[in-house]
Length: 122
Image (cartoon, rainbow, N blue to C red; front, side, top):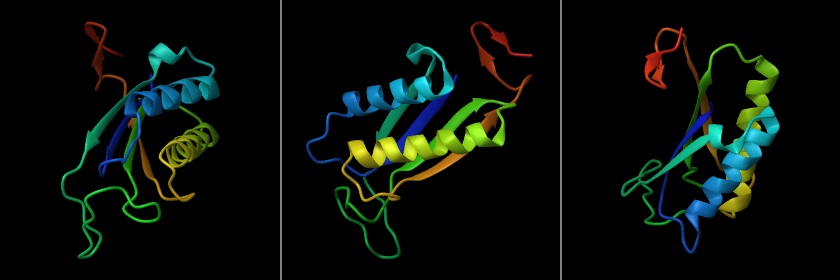
């Protein structure tokens, strides 16, 4: 159940649905899961500055997309690292960014603190 939330500047001439679909499919494959169980959202940021620099559209080498991956607790550290790297690599490739120009964090959804499917997951 990974959920990938992306906040980024406007992307010139990019099919975001295709990008999100590629991300979900590749992440699910890494985890050996069905793509329908991996979700991704995109929010375009109007204002995003690094210091005093605030471009209107995505530069290749600065202002990385800000990404949060949320998944159920208990994954081994190696799998978490692989997920973070894959998300960064796919987004850099799909958005034509310089390698490494994606900022990704990981959050665990803890049992008893998550509601889905009509119930609190224990």
